Amino acid sequence: MSSPNKFGKLSELRVATEFRDGKTIMAERFFTAPFKIMLPLYENKFEGQEVMQMLQLMASPGIMDGDTQSFSFDIREGSVAEYCTQAYEKVHKMNGGVGNRKVTINVEKDSFFYFHPKPIIPFKDSAVQNDIEITLEDDTAKLIYEEILCCGRVAFGESFDYRFFNNSVIVKKAGKLIYRDNVQFRPDEFDMTGDGMYEGHTHLANQIFFNVKRSDEWMAAVLKMIDAEPEMEGGVTRLSTGDVAVRFFGNSGDPMEKMLAKIQALKDEF
Image 1: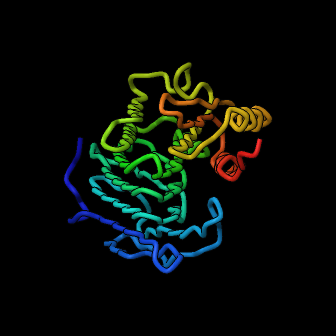
Image 2: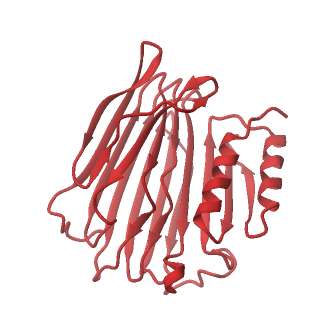
Image 3: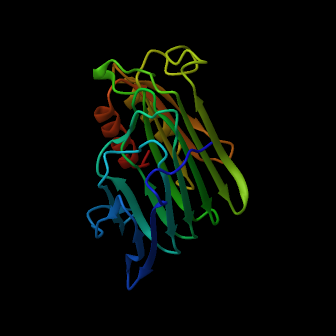
């Protein structure tokens, strides 16, 4: 589903990383308006290795009617990288059109990628199609995938007032499909506050650990952390592949981001 690109051209961002001379570097960096990628930082570590952090900036106010965006991340062999965004992603009111985004992530063997953009906020009468396709080369290609989906601008009285929010996440390993989450949120067709949807909450967080080993004890500790927060509820699931998915509801983006950060940083030393 798409509409004419009123920006006039594809808005594109492409990054490729390499492990060179004992360090992950940004081997390729390309972007068009309104995107920009800052020079990398090295402030964190994952399993003892320095993480190359890339921050995406955006000059526009958000996703507009008819926007077409393309993101590509090529995490090459041996790389340890992280992607985050500058601010919450706003999806603005549209006059019958759709905002489209396609994200492609490729993680090669012996690499790690932590993908955690800021929460996305769909405004009243907006519509967005967000497609994410992830390829893991083998069991040594590690990925932590995060997202927070908001119901809208709650402070403005806009809860589930968007036209639709489609969010598709597909993950393949060694060419085999191992995970698929096809969200079709349509407030005019479903009770978005009811059971099976947001269940009285305003925000939904997902955090999935692919090829990152997490024990049952670690999972129990995460569930205890979520249960200790009075405004959050959710669960932790072991997938058929052995990977782990964390999903929980909340009522504000900031504390949920902090919870995701705590979970990501929780070491499995049980």
